[in-house]
Figure (cartoon, rainbow, N blue to C red):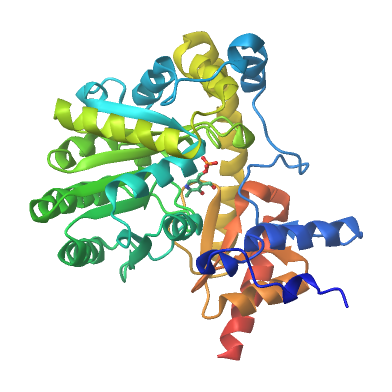
Length: 417
Ligand SMILES: Cc1ncc(COP(=O)(O)O)c(C=O)c1O
């Protein structure tokens, strides 16, 4: 008899042999699409890309133009290992323009923000050590940590008033420093995925104080994941001024990404920016990041780097992109306002939501809530203690149905307890 595949002992190393097949979010999306194709009316609030109201991907014509204008021979050449210097300068300016921090920063190009997160984990934690993040977090943080033989530790994200839990952050940082004598913090703001939360001025001020104090007890790298930076409210954009308080001795890292800001998810353009006042330390960090680039993907998509550089650095192109992005932000904001209005009326419990691709709704049993919603054709992503709702892929006209399904789903979960 011919043996079936499962009869073979695996060639994989044990830690790779039991990996889950599909990302669960993509699996949910596949089911939503299959049912929609079969003719059912579906609300698919699972995916992390901004969609137009007609269900097509929202893109920016100025970005497409910029890609088309890159000379093909230049695009075909290898990018420098750490990325073109013009790209790195433009990204640093994008983070810190008009402040002294720009001169105190180095960077490396990465395939999206994901690559930046990877480099941070590889270079600021020893194998076996854990990064510290909020208890609600983007799942791939754990994937990256496991893949790189590190781990994730969390602290409670919200206090009793529903605000960022500064005391839990401070305790978590102290715990990690005590245990491993160094810390790497991942904080995703504005428009945190999955909760939608953006730190306000007071919370930023408190966080920077905590980081500064904790740095007395060991090296701290504080990484701000800015995947959704351009979609935050104006109030949420004021984080840069708090960086000055954290650096020295802490290093501040920014995981920068063009995926959402330029609606270019597939081009894989990103960077890790590191800010520190000491020149020698900056040089060491730049060398380490460049080494990691060589040791993982060699160099990034040159076409993407060149096109995004022109969009960042050439004022006319930048202005065009900003205007087009403003339309996308308005499209999303209309959905955010509709959600806040309807969810308030339906008495759903969710974090402060001032803009961004996602919001989370708290529930005693997320699987039961998501299942009940799926039964009526509304797809959301179950998390621990909440379901994630992607307003980025939900037209404003569907928000009422979405909220009604959420209310019923949360009630169904409550009833099961
Ligand atoms: C919180 C968060 N960080 C980082 C990323 C990285 O995205 P990319 O690698 O496309 O830049 C994402 C993408 O969904 C995200 O949600």
